[in-house]
Length: 463
Image (cartoon, rainbow, N blue to C red; front, side, top):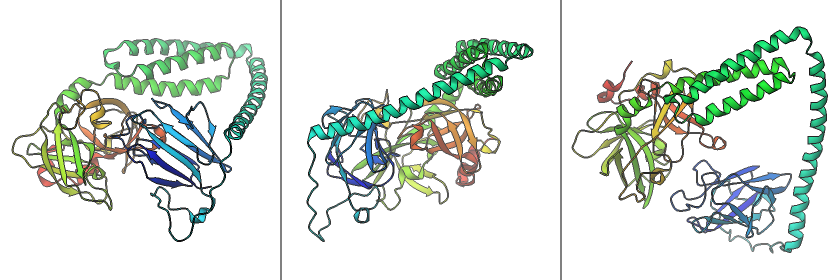
């Protein structure tokens, strides 16, 4: 069942988009299905709301937005059914409003995600009569309460099954198993002590949430073991937590202050102007004469207009430097800029081959997530002082085409350098899946960057 969302207020007022997929994400992040303006619709969150289409029924939920969602003026709590003509309000005065419409004939629907315009070929069919508010509320209540009844029924069945399972497990734990259980308990106690030391270490800044989560999981496992739970399941969970703790411990021991001191001044805020619209991204200096690397999509829109102006501002500076595009990669999301101003410019400590990067290795990312909206940037694009944001993480996957890391990025982080624990670049951030909320990050491996470096930048490669 295709639907049409008509934007009635906000920066994109007047636009219409049609969708036929089962899950439609709405927000300011560029990876949303319905993307609102990241610079103007400031009351709309990066991931604000989500519409689901199941068996011909459309429902909407708020996915943790900062300023809330309303349907027909009523605050949205949990899931709510949508009907023809419903008005969805995202955020407050600087938010946006949408109208929800059903499309009866999918064959007449425009392409997914395109702006729709009325077709003059035939007179429009009469609009379906809008039901009164009482009927619509009754149907929504019935939809939600029926779901609740199913959930309660399944919960009751699950409780019975779990109870029977626990009884069976308790009977299986004979006296001969006590030595194994006591050994596991001792192992957990030792690892809890190690976590306590990790939480107090000076290098663990920014890891308190992860360390706290591991601590809570271990405490729950202790409870399960003491109550006679499955040793096989607990052993598996202990091994997984041990790997997570090892990764967190490695991150906590990295000298991030040294890495930042070596590289921060070379991280640049990039702005690109196209037909009066300004978009932001990140890049970093490779050579003293002003060669900068960023993402291809930051400076070049496929099928769109060429940039009329490019400017860069290095971390800690208020000076905007004009730049021009000198090379675009055909195979990867990479582009190279040249500063069109005299001077000597900061560079990163070096670029290291990514072939030796292993899963679980600690990394750091420096860039400008959310552009000039981040703290310390000063607000207006004309008066800001560029101040890069640093985040820590680990490598979660390393293959020839992609270096995947567990860290945080957002719109504006495109082109950010990924540093290893020596402070050398091993990747260039270019995006991630929408459902990961910025926590799964894709980057171009440095091996592919090295293969495309201009000749004058060969000296930046460090083994």
